[in-house]
Image 1: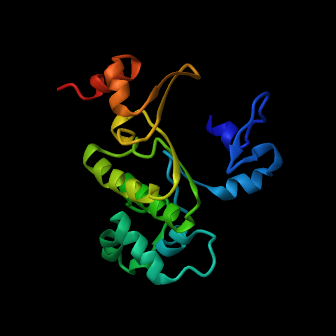
Image 2: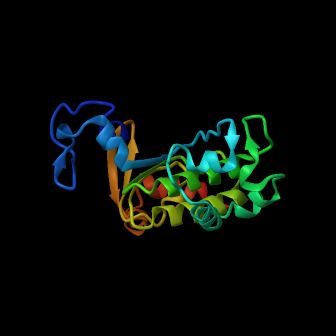
Image 3: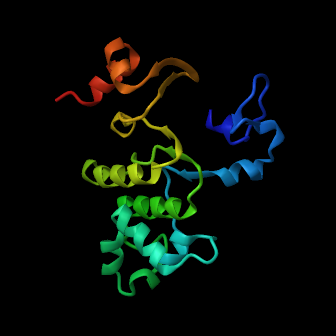
Amino acid sequence: MVNLLMKFYDINSGDIKIDGVSTKELTRENIHGLFTMVLQDTWLFNGTVKENIVYNRKNVADETVIDVCKTVGINHFIKTLPRGYDSNLSDNDSVSSGQRQLLTIARGMIEDSPFLILDEATSNVDTRTEELVQKAMDKLMVGKTSFIIAHRLSTIKNADLILVMNHGNIIEQGNHEELMEKGGFYADLYNSQFQM
């Protein structure tokens, strides 16, 4: 679905519209400019913390970066680094997977696109860190249309609409309460994840 939405594949039939405009009329670059993606595999490049968060955005004030990092819950960690926001990061540094994910979420907040795709954004973190990442993702999603791809169902419990897919087909849809009441595939999966 995301590949169709992002125009990685052309649509054979039907149509996808964004604010009433067919994606057939938009370039791939136009569509990509509307979306922020936070992926399962986080990445940091050689550069400072601030450069990693701002990425290729121009004229982002230091105060904006700090405010975003406070919102996400990564500011305290950054302040413990030798040069704070000016500390250099690389893939060899001892930045935990949770901290990487929070930095990636901060990058997404700076990007501030109207649409958001979260692809398994909590899958590489432990349960304790997942709560921090989940709170940060909740803040990132405010005011956006968000598409969340998740196997950890705790991350989608509050979604307005959940599409349950199996082997590439949508087999159930509804919100969490509706799907739990149905007692189908979603309910079985949810209950298996939260059994003591």
